[in-house]
Length: 111
Length: 115
Image (tube, rainbow over all chains, first blue to last red; front, side, top):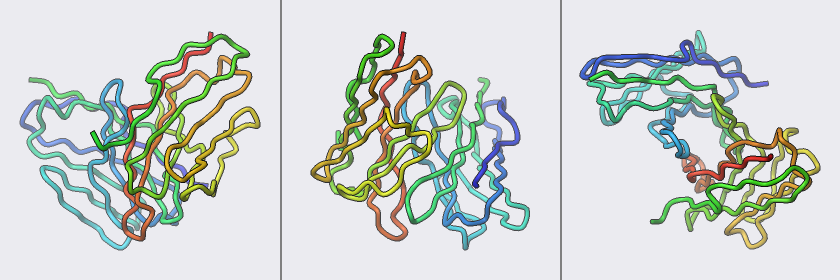
């Protein structure tokens, strides 16, 4: 079955620096890959996704990179701000429905 | 607010009692999902609906759990004879359910504590 793991459970960065959160997965049968942000007491919030036939996608201050050869996904956040402090999850999705989540990386932004 | 809503936000119950949670998805969304999340973990898939049809259930969904979406709009998740291990955040999400439109939008969750 699917498994998703993040490389580091915690990440601490200085405000203004770039952040990179990594994720590895085991199964190549996903149609797309998603990054979510979850703040304390709230549900996961969609950040950005990437289809399995792409290797890079950019949003506002965020970039997702997908390397299907080594089954690796990363989220890059440019100019990290205190409001970016949260838990970040990668998830594997299929057009058939459910998503499979990893365990999350806690990002702390130091002022 | 046109996002996904869940009710109640918090529920404390005694072991053995039944509880029911409600989820109201984004109005035009055909798919509705239930997930469970325990502290420090990512959400775990429980079940999902395409309109009123329940299309997939995880093996995490024991026979004490039942979910319905009778009119293809709101959904309920019931847990019978609750156990302490049921304590978790129960998350609902919805999506359009169309090709290339599978982004799931989550509600705030219902936090359940079983004493």
